[in-house]
Image 1 (cartoon, helix red, strand yellow):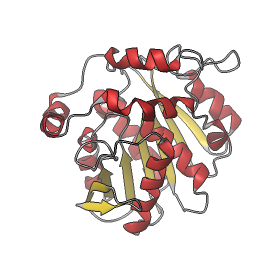
Image 2 (cartoon, rainbow, N blue to C red):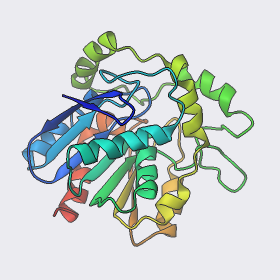
Image 3 (spheres, rainbow, N blue to C red):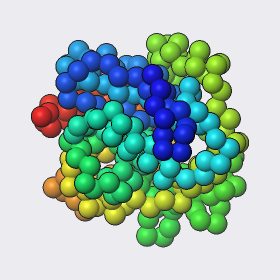
Length: 264
């Protein structure tokens, strides 16, 4: 199915099941099929599941001028309003998690039951006071290093064949051109969503990967300590960046427990 944003871009989405809505948001260069090991789990447990390809990704429309995560956050908001999604749980991976941080900050009046953010520090640029950014990038180096980091191995031991089989035809039909979307990645890198997490007033689970090539999971401990009433942290072992695919069993247990605690 397709949805049109306020600026006319077509967003491809899928709605499955009924019940408490759960919205799954993929990351930079991703596809909605990456959630294929979560969708049946959620449906079996009685949730409505909404997935979508973000603009410039997958089967959704592409624009040449996408240079801001803010536009993607607005797309998420417009999709939820357009589909009349009430009190969803938002689950995001990587840049998709950063968008959820931004969503909570930008749309405080939109009722969200809870959120799960997967392997994403809210501040990508490292400083002396914040050594928990993306790899070793700083304000001085991020453009050059993000260009080079496209070849970093994201996973520890790859992802299951089931996920690869779901992604393969999408990648063939809708190849993601990283170089064309570097302005978006640069904007993502410059954001600082720490205030959004520190001031969150909805349950927020930060899921980190012990073998992430990108992030030191201790960032989540810092944020949980800053907002203990709402923010919790769970680390998944034997996983690289794509936790929900690499360690689907462990992730689904965390997801199920969180959803059970915050089911309407």
